Image 1 (tube, rainbow, N blue to C red):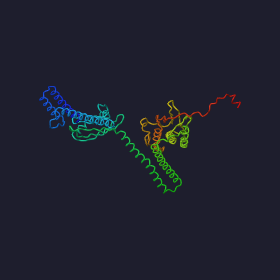
Image 2 (cartoon, rainbow, N blue to C red):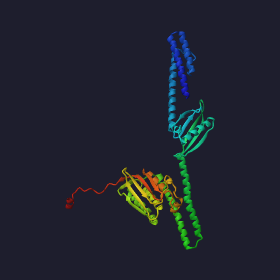
Image 3 (cartoon, rainbow, N blue to C red):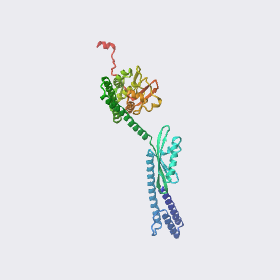
Image 4 (cartoon, helix red, strand yellow):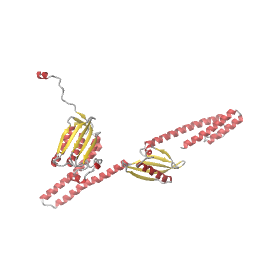
Length: 429
């Protein structure tokens, strides 16, 4: 801004100086020319150009004008370059930035902040908060306001406003920061700490209480029953720790490259893991819908873990005598759809978006009875992401649920060679 004003003054002064010189030269009168040189020098001085005190003559004035124009042109070019660089830097910021002058007028604003100007619905609340806080900042008070916008979608926006000093008086800078993802991660972390503390504290406390009771018990039947309960709670702690380690490994190590394997081998191994629990619950595992001619590339251990967790959930939340079906088919888009379908209790629609969160439970009471850790579906989601895939769920209360993994895959070439001989030739061999 300062460079622009000085440039205008200089150009005006140079124009006056040149006009005066031109008039003197055109008239051709020596006295008038001397007065023109003197008037031109005074105009240059008013424009901020250093003029020597000794007489400089007409050539000297022209030299001063030429030098001043070159210097000012270079300064203006540098100023424009700096301004362009600053504007590019503002555009690169994810936060919205607004600069307001002392009159309350916006002098600079990046694209992130422009989204809140003349907005409707929830974003209009941000604009109103900015206007209110700017008025306070112009009086010298910095402030911050946290706005929770219920949307949809739900968002949290933090508005920071602070006064700054400028050449022409006070000004205000406004920072608008969308911290929704940060708040969501904080909530996940808090929930994780609370849930894992509960998951470990409950069985550990039960083990201590059962062991204390066991010390004073002489009845063999009671001792056996208490020992069995201790073993159950110890296994529960072990399963929780194993799932936590598995989830941590999947999140941090990613996918093992280069391995190719058949889908039906992965499903068969997962079924073998869950078969004892299924038989105990009276549930049939049907894998007849798995295409034996499809291969996957990636981490076999991770995919086996994902399918095992889907089968484990299906068995736990199904009624005795029902069937859990596993299917794997290659679609027209070249992606495998691997699904696990049960006819169990189903999932309420309000919970479908949250079931892949760590420790999230649809039915707290039922989950405690089944002994799940609440980490299985989180593992499935991360395995799908590691393999450039997705996981989807369809469910209806009282009808059942179907979980589907969509993964890149390819058909296995038929190893059987094609014979070109005739039956007669075959007999003649």
